[in-house]
Image 1: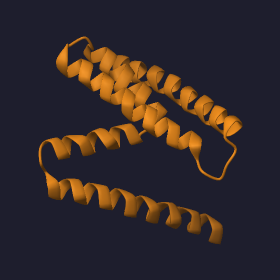
Image 2: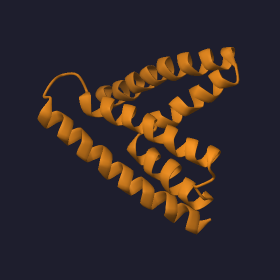
Image 3: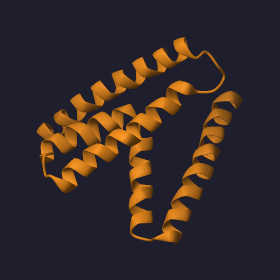
Image 4: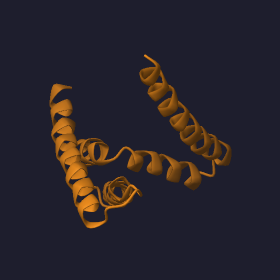
Length: 125
């Protein structure tokens, strides 16, 4: 278990560094109120997790340790939106329309609500 945590952790560190650098680059190239950096890492992360899962499913080129490093670690550190998007894809692929709708709606609504609650708690303290 410790080995798996280290593998995922190293991937997460690299992914987090990549997220930071991508955000800085986007802000320097496109200074705007639109969050281009976050948008870019979300889209890139979704593309990468699609490639990594595709390789794992089709060719078995990705070992369990590489799965931990690339998908759980790197993609998880780069953006958790990629995992969310893959979950949504699987729900659509398996035609679980109600779970898809529920997961999408609740994730967005509760995510925004919890950000507001957390910020409000700190602001009022």
